[in-house]
Image (cartoon, rainbow, N blue to C red; front, side):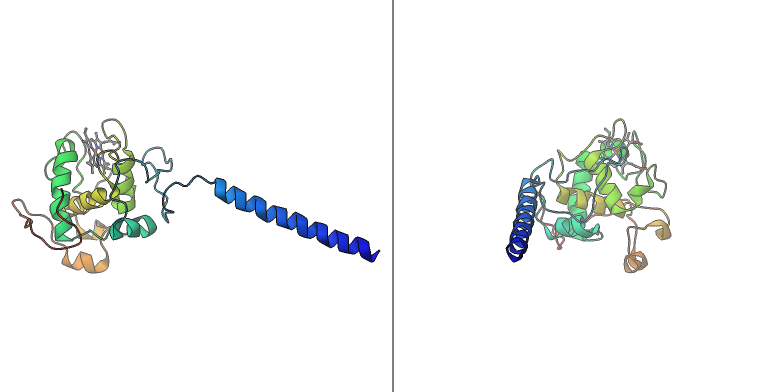
Length: 200
Ligand code: HEC
């Protein structure tokens, strides 16, 4: 009788051991899809999850990208060195369709408070639209911009905003107090200091 009890205990231990080993193997078998992100980015139109490790290489190990993938907060907002880069990235990749000042052309204006997709009022939404595209001519841009470059482009788009400050939900309360919209002819100094190194 006592022998049997010991056997049952041993068996139980063996079964539990196996279960743990199994769980370990399952964890190993998980695809390693890049760094774990806190935020799930979703395609603006289909809602399908986006894999931020896909696309143009590089621009993923900056403090700003790591922070953004975890929290959705864009550290480049209002940073002059990033606005300088964002202006040039926007001119190359976006302004042909959205206009020099994001006033709208073939694509809709991005400088007012009307959004086809209200998710774009958050930087997580805007990032997702740039990364994964939307409808028609608005294709995904993850092959020609790295996540870091997207954050710089977003900072520039937010700088071009001319709508009421109260609708600028991407700004925190302090940023709202000091927000000054872009003025035509404004020049960002090429040697502006900040978090963003000049583009190659
Ligand atoms: C080839 C033309 C084209 C280019 C280049 C382009 N877009 Fe678009 N974009 C469009 C069109 C057309 C739409 C409308 C699509 C829709 O409604 O689904 C759009 C929609 C958008 C929207 C949604 C706006 C809203 O009101 O919700 C955002 C944001 C956007 N584009 C940002 C960008 C950014 C940033 C870039 C550069 C990285 C870019 N686009 C490059 C044509 C373009």
